[in-house]
Image (cartoon, rainbow, N blue to C red; front, side, top):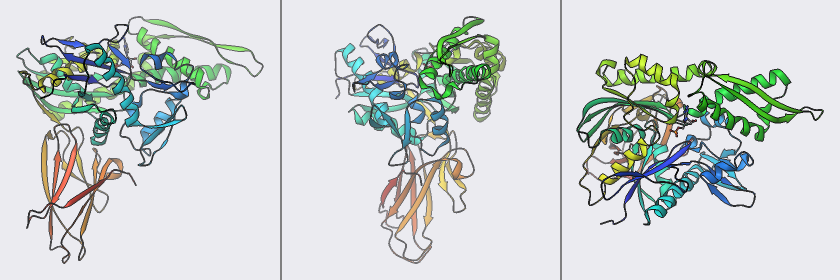
Amino acid sequence: MHKEPIIGIDLGTTNSCAAIVEESGNVKLIPYKGGEYTIPSIFAIDDKGNELIGFEAKRQWQLNPRNTVYGAKRLVGVNYSSDVVGTMKKAVAYNMRAGAKNDVTLDVGKKEFTLQEISAKILGKIRDVAANYLKTPIKRAVVTVPAYFNDRQRQSVKDAGKLIDLEVVRIINEPTAAALAYGVGKTLKEKVVIYDLGGGTFDVSIIEIRDRVFEVKSTGGDVFLGGIDFDNAIIHHVLKDFAAKTGIDLATDPVAMQRIKDLAERTKIDLSAREEVPFNIPFITMTAQGQPLNIEMKFTRKMLEQLTNQLVDRTLQMVARVLVDSGLSTKDIDEVMLVGGQTRMPVVQDRLTKFFGKPPSKGVHPDEAVAIGAALYAHSLEDNSNLRIQLLDVIPMAIGLERGDGGFHVVFPRNASIPNAKQLLATTSIDNQTELAMRIYQGDHDTVARNDMLGEFTFSGIVPAKAGTVNVEIIFDVSVEGILTMRAKDPATGREMKTTVRVTQS
Ligand code: AMP
């Protein structure tokens, strides 16, 4: 029996947040020093070698951009060779390179870090803040991830917990957590859409709530679409305008870029409340003759909407796909719930209102719902809890095997319910073969090359025999958390074969 509480953690791209169900049964967000409920998901090392996490890291990032890591959630569980890395390299000042397993390694303050280590630093900070506030050690947590995270990305978050001795007792999807925050304790019978546009990721899920049962009908998203991309649209516009006026490319100056980035985000946020805001940065750089140059511009809400129109379009295309996948139409949806800071942009709300024929609900707090839902679920897992919640979730992308011709043999289709298990009968293709290797991929494309490789599974201990005469039964298990494990058996004897997994990408 565990005495310590399990907390809920929303490990966000830009901000993270933790919550707990108190003994009274109330859910409480855990406040940080100044009373803030969110902590920036930023890690830095200063010039004296001190590690800074959260606000301390954010405060100094303009002056120390190369050793300040933000937005790292986008790189979690990603291969170095993936397109994501190239895009990130253009957007951030910290250095990334290929790690031992072709994962991404970051150089910060002359040390190297894996993405698990960076996530662990942020999780550790949240854990320490919570332990300090609650005056009890925190050893276990429910951590949320974007619904569109694949198996590797989920595994990576669990591994991050291990590094700091924090048991991630359950990974749940962010939209599902938001639905819990909305629905627990209300005896609802509703179909809801959770539209979650955060700092770095977009998720949309259709969830049927029947009292304590939360059944995800379909989910979709983009782990590369979020508030940061709206900021980048402003940044690109500013850089283009400045280059046209002065012939100077500010993109190569990290300190200037950091100042532009900061103001871009503030401008975007201000434009949610105002029609027009100035965009002025004094002494951004100098001419070759040493003359100081300023940025002097203004942005209107209309301009921002034009610059980001296709980003909003992409989210709505995904909403349409998820609706089709669920077999429902807009009329069947009782509520549309907004989650994530970027949903405060008025045009996002207007477009959703047009799409569904009714305005989105204000039923949950966009910044807090995910942590609250995680805390409720965490509480339901505690030994002494009488809160019963049943989560029926789905996998966001198909999981399957590489075929001989490079095609993708789907084992679990997209939106397959989890937990789930499937069996497949394989056989040997050469005489006296004692090992069978399979490459497993996740994604929605027909060819494996365009999907993400989850690992190469090798089953050994096959009894030597003529090709095609021995059967091997492969068992695929996807856990409630969307994490895949595989086993193989000899169906004749029932004997399990040894399985090794390699997650490096060739
Ligand atoms: P989250 O990951 O949910 O904390 O979302 C943070 C994102 O929401 C960041 O990209 C913020 O810039 C953005 N954001 C926060 N407030 C607003 C606002 N009022 N209008 C537009 N975007 C916002």
